[in-house]
Image (cartoon, rainbow, N blue to C red):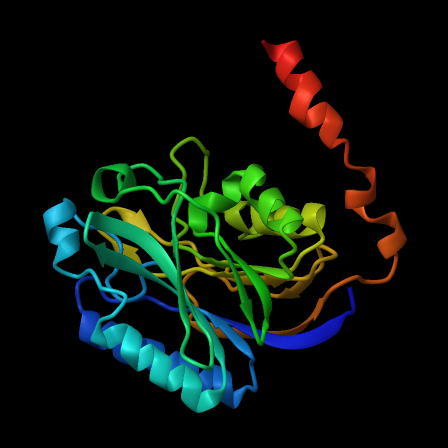
Length: 281
């Protein structure tokens, strides 16, 4: 596999709860700003058209978006205008219910949809879980999709790596974890940032996370959006909590120096698939 460098961006900001039109306008502005920075790929936060905290499915449904609706059409037009690939999170209104989803919109207007596999906390009462991993080939590279809590499940990132993705794009709404003593460590870094960095390092694939900031109900969102190189090095971020920012970085897709020491060369799928299951049964 040959290597190439692309410029990527992640937008960190605070979508307004329930104000779909204002949120769409904000997202289009972020697309323009990323294009002005010559980014080839932009990632926006989870649920960026709606906000996040809804009391029940009926409330969430009022701010859900269909994939063939006007918001997606506006994103397609703006991505085409700038020749940019967009990854953005939204509440998807589907025939069988609501999903916490992300779309990938290529410059040619093609739309691909990923539905969050691992629902967190109250999300389980609002949304249906997705049922498949998604890999999308775009001019910005072969993209694997994850949303927020998905990062906590290494099985998914490894499956994406084995499917040949060149980067992982992750819209997020990181908030405090009640099991932890504090949502941020002494350096102001969220656990999600550390998980994103670990995911990139152990799979040797860049990870781009666009998290949000602000507060809704009793949730304070943690920021820490980041762009992590496939070496595990931090290319941009983590953006501090409470800060609105556009992170931009040039990242390498494909093998880096020292690729002969790749983790994949030492994998023992014979053990993972057979022996561990037998030992644990």
